[in-house]
Length: 73
Image (tube, rainbow, N blue to C red):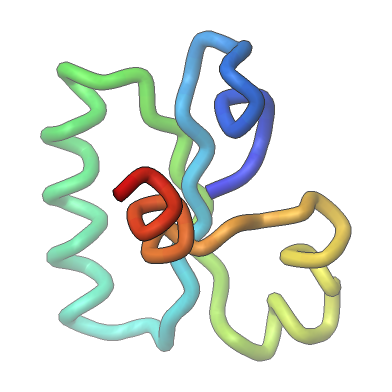
């Protein structure tokens, strides 16, 4: 997760999904399209090599959803 929603502001939820292209990712994209009809989701999908090359996670200070979930318990 990244963006302004991490700080309690903003009107959408920015999510980065990292994984190889393929059938599994295609199914996930379809499920997210359905969810985005009800939730203000902004989903970015990148391959691991893209994340590494662009250093996107570090640049935008992404936080893993598992980290967010454990910090709220």
